[in-house]
Length: 184
Image 1 (cartoon, rainbow, N blue to C red):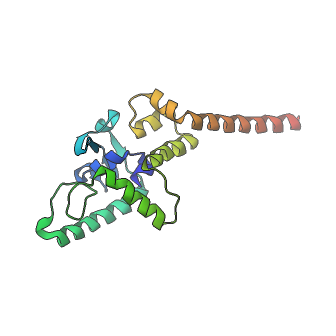
Image 2: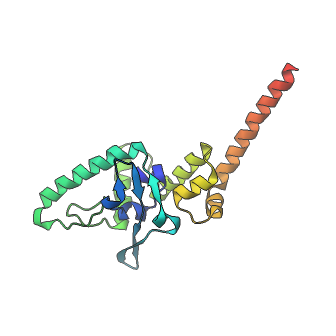
Image 3: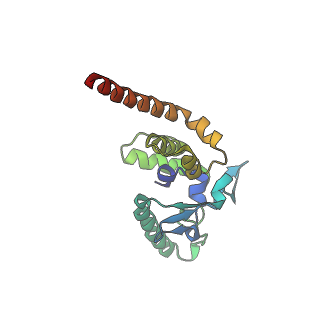
């Protein structure tokens, strides 16, 4: 949900900690990301603008995060002494941070169980940008939400959406002008 609603990267989702989520204020802060390089999983600062951002948390994300907190509490109780407190929002059954390579497997399983087309998790990020752009959100705002450091990155990656939106806008203008001319 966080990937499509806010365009979060895989590493940002699994690097998210409860201390950076305020469900009452509906805010989220992306400070860390978890990655795997050369066989080693590690945590690093979030990319670009992300590490300085406080993002509004869409209402549609609040209930799933509350559910995740309850689910994690139950896992903590079941794990007992085996629980390793990490503070992460998404953990294994014993509290350890999730391995980056396991995220796609879980994502695929959930999509299949819901009878949805399986996509790359990163495609959800692209979907977020596409939906925001198609809804007429200003490119700079889309850039901020995605955490890009430069507007050029946002526009290069999502230029096709802007072009489609421009075509649609010109088509609307064409219809308006045609109606106006027909009335005269």
